Figure 1 (cartoon, one colour):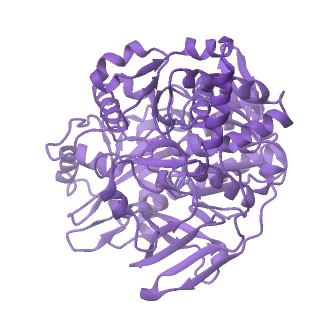
Figure 2 (cartoon, helix red, strand yellow):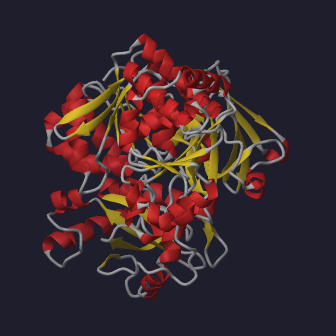
Figure 3 (cartoon, one colour):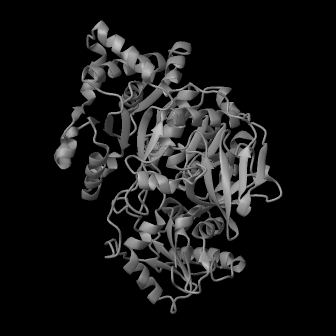
Length: 625
């Protein structure tokens, strides 16, 4: 693992009326191309034989090189023009990460067609199909793509009355004869595309209502990558190589991983695995073959990888062999997971793992702040990207953060009211997130992420609870054994937490299935968790932090019910609303089992009558990479 070249830290912080702080990086933002297609053209000319994208095809990798990618993008764009595609029209793209997905997206954006990527996971439930229909009615697509359109078209009704593209049509595009006038039209259309042109629409999670449709312009996408490259300067030292599963309908995968590869002439191996017990083996296989220089994952993903790395020295060597940086986001990284990954890296390379993290939202093109310096622990999100300014408004002992910069959305599609509510009179976007200063005496030390303000709640005593802090601190005691945490307690006098365990670590370290059976292994698991809970409570004695009981859930959060995002993070508000009766039952037993760790044998997945309508969440990240 080489030593990554990072920009020196230099920030400024000034006070404004009402004790607000203005926080920015002193380094000015350098010029950047107006459109993503400029990057494709540049690398197709400079390195036409370099692999741009690779996709698993059985035992081999199917690849497309930069030169061929440009030719295919131009051919697909001319096909779309031949079909009458107009600037500002929308393309509904329902597909997993794939080479076809990438080329079609770039071709559409090349001629001003706005891409609306949706996850194919929605095809597997009635709620998901209803969500696709709802989104289709709002974005009014003139074009749509899905590998097997017959699956979805009947469910969309008149909302799907548009031109449907197929994989065969994309494959055939390069062999079609286009008149010279059409070539001229393509060149003319490219000249009309600039930084203000809409490139894509991405959805927020809808955790507090109907999902918002976030406008992304070409300027946002290009500015974001210039901002990142100025702080993570090693991206320009050698083309990055990624093995990445993050979905492209989500801001982190689509706006960060993919665009970073394109901007820096890198290679993206599309990982067909996911951080689940069923699919993690595919990710391990891909990582073993690729040996990436850059690796991004959510803490859940790192926890899923950890048992495989600890059990196989050859995999560990392949994983760390040429890695520049490990990047995480989306949730706190357990300190014990950090330490164990660091130990593996030291045994393999002779030096510690180099970690980085960031923070951002769908509305900020994925990233607003990153750690571009070595940090000593988890939870830090770094400093604002060049060209951005943060406004930090005191909120009890934390700060509510609002942001301004060229990577911030101009607003929400056809939603003037929520766009107006999202921005203040000075043009700052209100993120709804809470942060603290890592070192109040040293602005260059950056910020710590503390959670969503919408997740905060009051106890019956009127004292505020910050679930994000509780989750991060509890995970520091449990390590990667606990994958995620939900904190319950609005209007109560005491707090209960719900936990999900890493099944592979449970089996490996406790020889148990995690169901809490009354055998010796199950009791050892219970004793470990109760010890971690007791250790946490020793230093968190106040009613707003102390945990009265922990309940281990075997059933994972439901994506179909909107409790789980595509990135694998839990929507706390949705979970608590959906499981209100179940939560009530746990509190009914609290007095009898106070201080214990309980294993729930059955859960209540049925919507509580007061719960909001189901919509599967896509992309409003609390701490995205």
